[in-house]
Length: 71
Image (tube, rainbow, N blue to C red):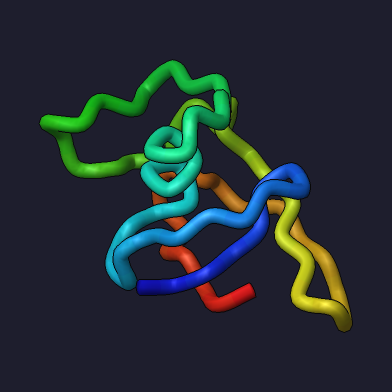
């Protein structure tokens, strides 16, 4: 399990899950258009962009394709 923070909430997620899957499991809404749980993540619509911050820098990534990381 990986521990991370989304919108100030502590969330635990499986290691191979995406940020979007972790958020959905914690009832945190991230808008999407192209995401469907039965299909391979594609990230084409870019509506699910989120900012990730590792303490040194921040960047924008698609939450449907980016895997969770500790922190």
